Length: 223
Image 1 (spheres, helix red, strand yellow):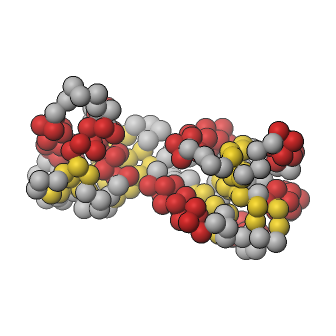
Image 2 (cartoon, one colour):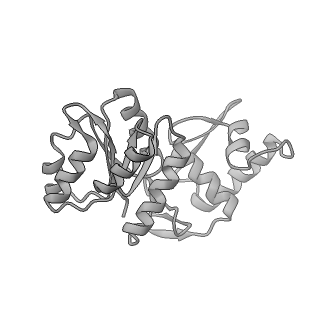
Image 3 (tube, helix red, strand yellow):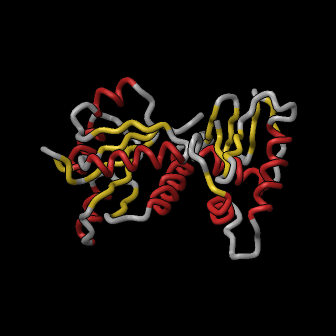
């Protein structure tokens, strides 16, 4: 089961970035530019986490959370805000926030905070990426093809995860060396070719599914 995250952020560019990055990380994401319909959504859908900007149009984000708590909605909340003074952070926690990250922020840090909070509050959730009949569960380090588990090495798992996080985007061999191997100059592009070949043999042994496409002279993409 994949975690569903609601992002309430009035800056359109930032909202789109968060929707993209959280979706890429394997979450279901619902974005809002204000808090107007949040109560109705929480009453109708199962939501696992709220990311709330404190500077919302017409309402302070922490006041929105106070209102939701009074109505009985105890969904975990991460405040995302430019309000960085200690008294403002403490106020955010007093008004129902579970974590607090200030703008500008590092996306990797936000993802780690999300993961840590979900592990505390929703331990039954397993983070997963899905593409066609491929399912990759990050927390348990498992990969399934049509419901059948496939044993991968750590390197193969990380390689598939990077492809699934960027599905239908062509990733160059240099990109993969940097992000999967964390290359310090000790690996060559041939290393990627060999690893891709082994990964294909495991997830598509009869070559009938064609998950991974080679883009000649460029790299690889998941299709």
